[in-house]
Length: 437
Image 1 (cartoon, one colour):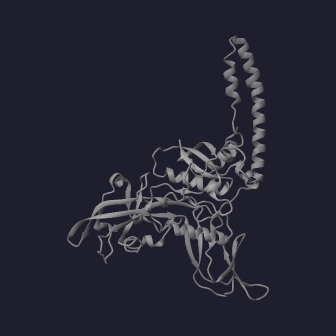
Image 2 (tube, rainbow, N blue to C red):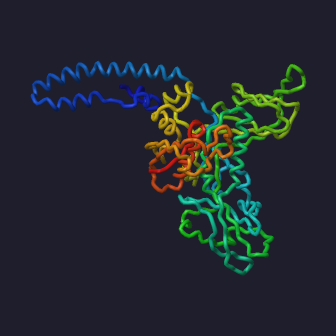
Image 3 (cartoon, helix red, strand yellow):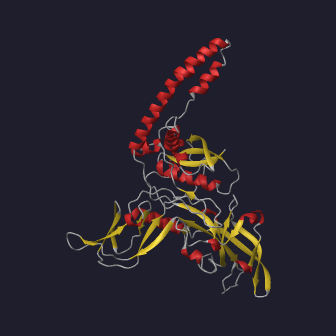
């Protein structure tokens, strides 16, 4: 088999033969069972040099056929894959055109201190931390705070941060407005951010905002994994645009159709238009997006570019990117045209391992349980999608079993949560649950 064909098979055809068989090694192994050397020599000539060449020829023909079928089935060119990582705020590189802050406010001078995150009564927001610890960082923690020249004992509260969630919810609404199918965004990093509040003594108020330099918090066993001034970045760039010369009146003369030309901006990237009160309809066509409006001219409409080129790692960008990308394969191309209900164990495992999780997790088995109460309901990464037709608490359980490739890794639970959330979008018969074994 030549190198080119081998590369093509590795790229997409490797999954066609579920159990590849090495005839040559098998024949040589069987030849060892022949004790008579003359007979062994004769069998070797017949089997390896005769039948072996026939087998190699047939394999090449099958590989060529597979390649032709593979190329005839067009891949799903997903221009809307989302990748995300976490960096130190001070190391953000504005010249990197593949990663952008999830919140522009995170780049403000002084970080997010004093931005007014809402706590309960008697609480003062201090800032947000990122945890590289596998266990949740929640509850009360002792520490000290500085007020002028005085240092006093204090109690701090940690809760999962909610400020990034609204950006995921807004992104889902934008996908819907653009009629683009939604794929679960891997929010494992976002789930590791925690808002820190100072618990004020009864009747005491503080008018001045606190910052990390004013506080010392004893996180206990979590301390070694707590990092300050970290922010999430993703491959979504916000673009502000205004009306251009591409204005086409509709037939009735009431509406205007504005063209947002995507082909001239880079055909590989995906583009979304943010809906607003002036936009009546958004329609995607090849190389352009048509925006229907009553306005002949407009200012400050917003679009989003989802960069699809390989992620660039600037200096001191260290943590890996998590994506919702799906690997290309023959079966994925074929099943994309014939997507139906889940039918086999092989189909289930294939769908899971198509996700970008191979460095962290491997699916090893599954169970179907009748008792819906065996596992409590947990919030997934698509918390904003409601399924009122088939209540989750009345479905059977599909329990997926995973083996960690990095035991104790701080993102492992988030990776499983991502898989379960995406599988739940594709499987309506069961409530999906993930466990490690």
